[in-house]
Length: 508
Image (cartoon, rainbow, N blue to C red):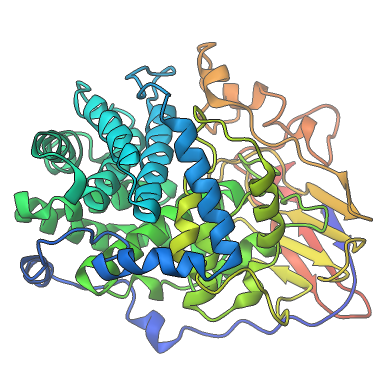
């Protein structure tokens, strides 16, 4: 017996997928270690160089003063920085096995304070960032057992070191530089703490980007380590970038798209800003389409189709602006203006790690928030191993109908037993919702094995992860089959009857 789940909607035809382009055939990059080292040896010793050079740093204030939206963003950055002045530095306190919360607070604080200094020249921001960086440099380590923690901390320290270099005293520079090398860049060059290097999920994107940021910030002190770090990233991050094929979707859902893709963009932007090449990484199949993914996954309610371990709230996405500019698709910015207005109205919490990449808007939102004519499809399916389909009645109307449907496997990346589950918006309201992810530490602290995808795993005892919490079939109270896989077997964008059908037989 076939078990099918289907969803229908309205209007417009989606173009057929094309075969691999000439650019895709040159992916993944084949840069040699010698080629990378030659580029490293030619890098100027001046600062700043990460994401922006000295000329762009000098021009930043003028660009902000000439643009109302950028000026509003800059005002929030400075407001946030002011609120951070009296907050003590992050301590080395783990939550369970993770230092990740503190690493993310460090990213938010140092990126915000350093950007505020570039905008105003005020030394109080340098002094506060230096206090933060000296405290972090004094940690015994940055928790390499959970390497995301090291990666984000290294990125934070690299930005602070590079952007504030000329204003830091030599003692602080030396302490931060040594910490970046010994607690970040050089750690995975040994025989331990480098299992992430061949990751196929967001770990590869985040960790390679963090290490490259650190290596490029202090490359004068260890060009061999810099060359090895960059060559390793070029060779391995394509494993994670393979997730974007064929149409720019992301198997871990919109929340993890934000995390992994922001660091993926940072990796490319870091390489471009310092070495003047991304070695062809942007030619990964589907990467030139993934800038549309947040818009496609967001309903007219403003909520995301939050499958897998994700939340439904959408914040400002600086990476979307990078994609929109880079691939000349202003319509990918749909939803960004509304998210910005929400962010501008929020009160500042200087202890939070939320919205840590917000200052990057000042670098990547150069073309504003206008979307122009919308060329996004009303009906779309991802065509990958974690297939999703979305249908909507319009892009311009708040009362549009929107539906999202998911196939795939519970054992997929950050997977739930949500096969056949759907969300539904109408009249600006989300009527059929997904509860989203459970907090990881809350489950791990109970001694539960949350990360096994086997049928008898504790993961499926958690209500939010099981099929009992999703908008899908439950037969006789049984859970879905964790090893099963459901494909989208029919998809139509025909105006007469747009629809999608998932064959769920294998998960029951």
